[in-house]
Each structure stands twice: as C-alpha cells, then as structure tokens.
Length: 418
Image (cartoon, rainbow, N blue to C red; front, side):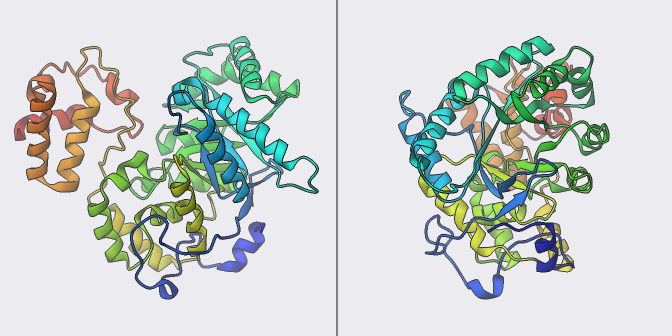
C-alpha cells in the first residue's frame, strides 16, 4: 500500500515516530523468523520531490553474499526482496570486492525477465555513488557513471550520490567549479541520471549547512538509536525542505546485534516484545521524517525478519517516545559504531581495535575490557598500551571518524586503566 504524507498524519497527529503495537504482541522470542507468521504488505513513501514512491525498507549493497566469487545467492536474495515489495536497491563502486554494481545489475536483469509480460509490475529503482577520492573532477564523474551504467546494465541511474562527505570542506570541494557535482549535473542534463543526492558522515551542523545550499534531492545519513541526537535536526530540516531521507546503519554497523545482552536489557525496560533487530529497524522505519531505512541484508532469514518489522509499526505518542529515547541514550553517548574509517593511522596504530576495546568498557564494564586487552595481546602479540604510546596526536583518525569521537582522549583514558 502507498501512504502519502496526509495518510501518515491521519495515523497520529501527535507523533512523528512509528514503533510497535506493544499491547497486542505480548512476549515474543528474540529470534529471527519466530516473530510473526504473516508477511506484511510493504509500505511506500514519496521520496522527497523526486516523484517516486520507495519502500520504507530497502536493500543496501555492501553485504551481499559472495561465496567464492559466485553471485547466484546474492541475486536470489535481491530478487526475493523485490518479490516481498522492496523496490529500492543501493549499491556503490568497491562494495563486495568491487562487484556490488554488477551483482545488482544481474539481479535487475532477472527481475526484468520475471516481469516480462506482466501488467503493471512493481516499479523499482537503484542508486550508486561517486567518491571525490577517486573521481575528483567533472570528467572523472562522467567516466565513473559510464562504468556504473555498464555494470548495472541500465541506460540511466535514478539516484546518484555524491559519496561519503566527512565534513563541510568535503562538500565544498565536491561542488567547486569543475568538480564532481558539475559532472553529475552534466550527466543529469544528458539523461544519464535522474536525481543528485549526497551521502554523509558529517556532523549534524555540517549537514544542515549542506542542506541549506538547496542543491540536493536526497540525503543518505547514518542514524540509529545509539546516535540519534546528533542528526535529528538535520533530518527534520531535510523533511521540511522535502528532501528525501535515507538512513543507513540502523543496526550501528552490526554493533547492536553483536551486543545483544546489553541491548536486550534496554528492550526489557521499554516493554516491547519485538526482536532486538526489529526494534532497531522500527525505530528508523516508522519515523515520518525518514523515507527509507537501508539494511545490508546477507541472507533470506535476515530479509524475512526485517520485512516482518512492518507488522509492528504503529504511532507512539511523544511522551512515550521521549522516554524510550532517554533509555537508549543512557550510556551510549560515546559508543563507536566500528565503521573502521579510523584505520588510516600513518604509524599503523590499530585505532579501530582500540576503539572496540573502549566499546567493551562501555557495554560490558572494566572486567570485560581488561579481558579484551589481554586477549588481543595473546592473539596478536600487540601491546595496546605500547601502541597508544606511539600516538603523536596528529588527528588524522579523528578527522576520519564518522562520529567525531575524541579518539586521542580515549587513548589516554585507556592507557591509564590498563
């Protein structure tokens, strides 16, 4: 079914967030595949000003299964997602050993074969990206688009992203004269892409500044219940401007399911009966300001659990939502989502691993933290304290950090406690 903005307002004017039918569910097992037997009908939302309705749950192309170079399992997964109502597929160069675009293209070819002769099949859309790291000029972007089109087996890209903004300077470099944005504009004029969007890991304030340039039709942004305060204003502004909003990392890059015990305690406090994964997805999928929640599903079991989250979306009042957010925020202000962008230390300090150790301190306490430090030394013959002492505080890792964490400060704290 399609719910437009008016429909969502009718569902509950007092709230902007859909979560779950708590009173109807009762206690449920925290396991994929045992939540509910029914497969829900997909919900679609208008994506900003683009004139297209996209599924509230859509598919990320970073984690496709790719066993020994065989794309068959991934193709079947994408086709199954489409059959269940997913109609947006996100991909990029370099994903899945630089095969994600080709896998997506093969899957779309199979979808087209299945749809041949059908009356009014579900329309579907795809998006891919260009990074200023490899595509620095307008001409570079044009060449990148030509390559992506060949890989995708299409003559057009509906959604094209200026990829992975780290800060406002990154955005300014992209939109400079003769830069990547000019290449995307030319491609749009030539009919090779429909819409220009941006993907961002910048701060909320920086994202607001980018949105206020009024040159993008959509935004792809990291958002989940471990970091939501950082980006809420930017998301609300995008919604106000009718810029489509896609959220990535709804499971915090796997941090949430990998720390199930910690987050299940939060679930018990909230009184929901949903699975941990479904609660995290519903937190994003139901928000009025969010058009798409992007999930990197790896198999059909994950796909089914994700899809069934739709069964439990229902509007929450503002008071209950505020209480829920307060519960999840407690103790999570500085959690690292383990995205690994910090792994660029010129001295080869294992920054990512040390941040994982700090996570264990937040999530499991000092005992588990010390166990992790000892295990890392035994397993890798690396002394974390000695690695930290090599740090010259150049700030390269902090600039790369998608959450702008005080990494050097954490280094000092960890060194004192080892």
